[in-house]
Structure formats: structure tokens, C-alpha cells
Image 1 (cartoon, helix red, strand yellow):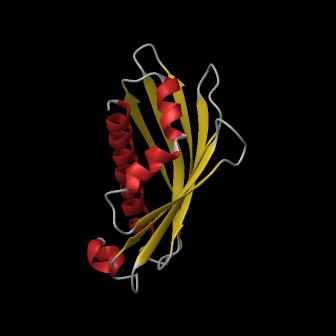
Image 2 (cartoon, rainbow, N blue to C red):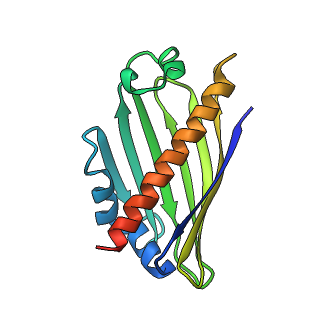
Amino acid sequence: MPKKFEFTAVLDHPAHDVHAALIDERYWRDRIAGSPTATVRIENPDGPGTLRVVVTERAEPADLPALVRGVVRGPMVLERSDDWGTLGADGATGVIVGGATGIPVDFRGTSRLQPTTEGTVLAMRGEVTVKIPVVGGRIEGLAAKMIRQIIEKDRAALAAWLTR
């Protein structure tokens, strides 16, 4: 059974600036610059003001939680795709989709970037599914926690990018 997740990040920057960063190729290249195992591919699927970014990162078994190491054989490659639409008066919508090699895990979610009087709220909700008998549900919980960590790293990188 899929595990649902929901996260909210608050940024002290206007929605226009946050959206501009999220659709800026330089932001995404800077975002992964510190990870020697990550790559990024950038596309503009629906024209100006939109962006699709595909981030791929490799994790060695020793870097994974023990429960996952017991299931994964060899390195795990996680790929996620973030799609951002144009910014309107009420905000912008994004979609995140991902999965991994070495373990049958898939996740999908929607993001909503909304302006507030103090800055911007970035809310994400979705679900993660791991198709492994017996331990799949426990790994789904770990995967949801890992997605939360990725989103928090994205939020911190975005805040740092916007304050430079």
C-alpha cells in the first residue's frame, strides 16, 4: 500500500523570486555541485517560464539504511524529475516523479508554490510505493523520510541561492 507524504516549506522571499530560481538552470546546477555522484538534465517542456529538471544520483549500498541494504544489490541510482509550470497571480504548480534502480520504488507528488504577505509557501504532497513483499511498507516509510530530507535540502539550497 502506498505511503502518503506531505511537506511544507516557508521561504522569506517573494514567490516571483522563488519561481525564478526554480526555473533557472544555474540554480539546479549549483544545487547538485557538491555531490560527485549527481547529474542534472534541464528542459523547457512548455516554453518560457517552465522547467523540467531531471536529477540522477547514485548511492552505494554502504550509504543506505540497513533495511534497504538487505534488499538492494549493488549501487542504487535515484532519478527524480521536477516539472514547474508558469507563475500566475495565485502561484505555480509543480510535479515531482521519481524512482530508483536496484529496488522497486516509485514516488509521485505535486508541489504548490503560493505567495504570502511574508514570502512564499512551498507545499508538496504525494505518495511513495515500494513493491517488495513483507518489508515494502517499512521501506516506504524510510523512502518518505528520504524524500523529506531531499525537500529540506532543496529548501535550504533555494534559500541560500535567493540570499546571495
